[in-house]
Structures are given as C-alpha cells and as structure tokens.
Length: 56
Image (cartoon, rainbow, N blue to C red):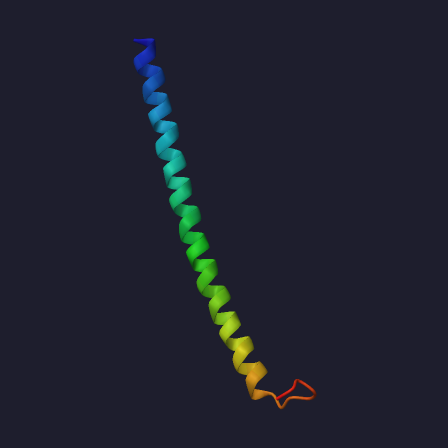
C-alpha cells in the first residue's frame, strides 16, 4: 500500500511541475511579444531620427 501512496505522491509532484512549466512557457511567450514590440518601437524611432555620422 505504501508503494501506491508514494506513486500517487510522485504523480502529484509531476503534475504540479507540469503546471509550473506551462506557466513559465506562457510567461516566456509574453515576454517575447513585449520584447518584440519594444524592438519595433526602437527601430521606428531609430530610423525616423535624422542620422549624425551613422553612415547613411
């Protein structure tokens, strides 16, 4: 009976880890979209600014 209880405990831990991993993956995806929009804003600002010695 103890082996069964330990197996159930391990399964529960694995399920919790899976939830944590999924949450982290969602956060990473969100951070990537944030970074992408920041990069686009920076690029737009950079290319809209008159260059001084930038070689263009």
